[in-house]
Length: 70
Image (tube, rainbow, N blue to C red; front, side, top):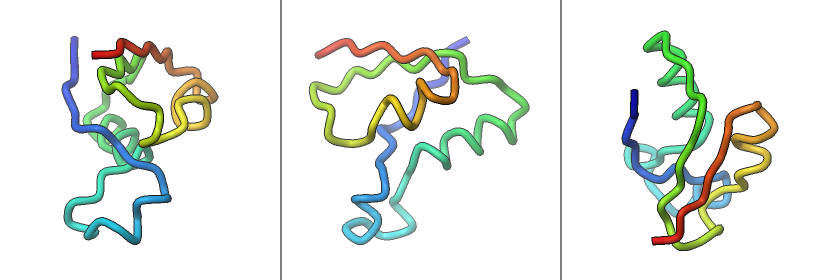
């Protein structure tokens, strides 16, 4: 199964975005957990590395991470 989601942001963006619009990696993982699902792989289609650190947010949590530059 696939879960499409908007790009999560790390803590550097907390002060720049309203809490209503903020979507972070921990929020994503909590949402998946609440739905009793498992996130096994993230396929990143952004053409940048600036939104979050894939190592600390996904790979360190044993979630496969693939980058496809679009």
